[in-house]
Image (cartoon, rainbow, N blue to C red; front, side, top):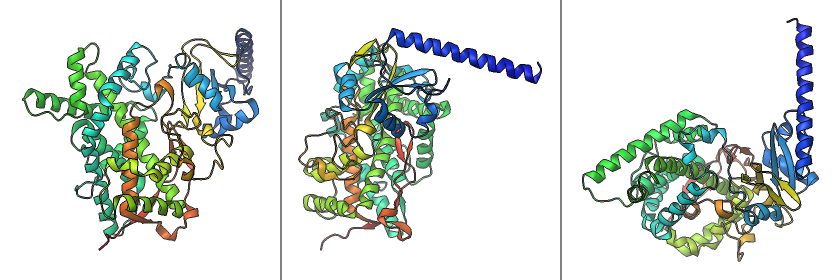
Amino acid sequence: MEPLSFLLYSLFLLIFTQALLHIKDWLFKKRVQLPPGPTGLPIIGSLLTLGDRPHESITKLAETYGPLMTVRLGFNVTVVASSAEMAREILQKNDQAFLGRPSPDFATAQTNYDLSVVWLPGNEKWRNLRKIFKSQIFTTHRLDALQGSRHQAVDSCSVDGMVRRVVEASEAGEAISIGTLVFGTTLNSLSNTIFSVDIFDPKSNAIQELKELIWSIRRSTKVPYDRLHGLIDSMIDQRLEFRASGSPRCDDFLDVLLDLSKEQGHEEFNRLNIKVFLTDFFIGGTDTTSATIEWAMTELLRNPDIMAKAKQELTETIGIGESIQEKDIPQLPYLQAVLKETMRLHPIAPLLLPRSRIDVEVCGYTIPKHTQVIVNAWALARDPMYWDKPTQFKPERFIDSKVDFRGTNLSFMPFGSGRRICPGLDLAVRMLSLFLASLIHHFNWKLPDRMAPEDIDIKDKFGLTLQKATALVAIPVVVAKAE
């Protein structure tokens, strides 16, 4: 085919395709009344408008098109909710209709991803798994029984404890990457909760490698999933041999899961279910916890007066040099306020992703079956309608406030809201509080290279989670014990 003929053919094909798309859109809009929204470009819709910071881009679009709008992303029609009222319609009033979930590429890269409680649609299988985790795994009794493993991951008396590692860095005058430090601590804390052993030496390069492994999972790579599955498989094999030998129980998460598999039968809850759950547990727990603590320490170093208040509360409640335990956390309201304010200003999950299972009417508009919906939790947490000086880091706003982590206030949903709220919320809050309190209580922190607090970079980067773009590095100084 000659070049000119090829160009004319390509142009005709493009015009014909666009005509079909416009006809399809016209017929679709005649059939259902979607919320208003930008027209977008041919074929790609508003993809370029969203760019690499979609949480900010759709917030700006909502200023023009309203708190419930339609955005076309390629061939996909997406409805965006950007107010507490619209979030309530989707996550509470019509929660059964919006129990669906998308199947993103990074999730489908996992073998047996359709067994994941994170990505399953809100069907009977999802409800059964959710019930198991709520009634058997994440109970107050079980979390209390396993808190020793989390204390060990932090304690200065433990060789590989987080505080001990920071003390060693302080003695050597070394700066520490906060995110990497907490990632390793979280990894071994979860490992002990699940398997009763440390999987990795926190001082080795394996911690950074696993961090990169989990981040690559978020970029839809199958190989990292298979490697993590292989690791979990080997731990399950070891435990099965251990149990068969008649050795004493560990009574950790793995023992509980294996007991459930035996009780319920392998058709209902089997080894594959266990492996997928533990994969979700590691991926969901490590990166999010380390990122939240990194943001919290970033804001505390940028605001020395707030750091001083948090440190004073810990000194008065715990005592200088004393180890912190989970039972102490309820006596630390300012620390809890710091965590809440961190999660408000830097939500790790900025966009919640419900999906309609049926046609749903919302405020006079029709959201068709299988439509992807985005609830912009980032915008809600910074909306001046709900928050005074919303871009300012001000933990005091949560003192004597009834707003908690459980998503009942729809302008603050760090763990989601409704039926699909994060099932590991209680464990996450315990770990976040323990880790942050330990870093504040036992150490003073200096910025490297004579950096001023206002010079700390607070840019974020968008992925499935909202990470700090530049790693926070700081120099610890051990707080001297009172004589």
